[in-house]
Length: 327
Image (tube, rainbow, N blue to C red):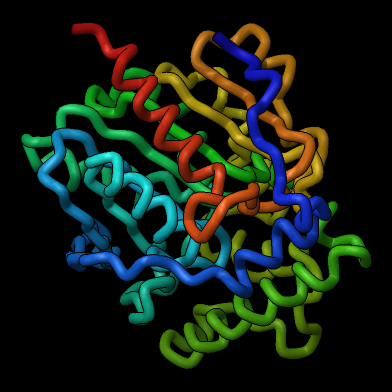
């Protein structure tokens, strides 16, 4: 059941532009206040992750992973959590290292391939016997993370029944090159300002073990990944990091039903981020590529929360996965 066409997504009549689809919800959306319960997960390396739980008493759990410079309470995370809650699904929304508002203990950050942290989150969820079925859902960078994780673990995660990856730059090199173009300055420079502030704060805490770009501030993703991401996390350089962490290199190994939802007009993505040929023969990968939708947008007609189509699409796919489980 590979390539999913045609899609049912139809954009709101006043949001047909890719940039409006991307920017409008990020700037204007208000989300339901949810009864989160925060837990601190201690990691084997001495660091920690902050986990936010939303429990309904379900036997099914959805684990959410956010995007670049996001956190567990971003609008798309809360919107998806609310949709899952309405479908009687429990939710575990986690913040990557350094993203929960509390400085981490080690001189490292998060990155697109840090599946060891996702594995720790999944292992923590598996300590709760009530969860018979678990699903991983990721947005943008978090989508790359869950695709890589599913490909690496293959059939090892017995309670992971499926995954959904939304707006995923699954070829990191190609996406970085696109984002480094002058016509993407608006997005890139916003991200880089936030990322650089985080590195400055880490340098104040950990000293010279954190590199600095003081003489030549990073103005491209390549420069940032060469200066910070690669040396902090054991990669030779940006090219090595992109090659070893891009989800396209792991998709073949996926062994649970997985939806990859990428809009064709996503301003962050390139053709390399749409593994169409792989999807045509892959027994578990469902590639859905609406003509429009922007980056983590997919704003359709409707009122308030009902207009965010990708969230209901996620719930529908999870329900379908549950029906596909033997027995």
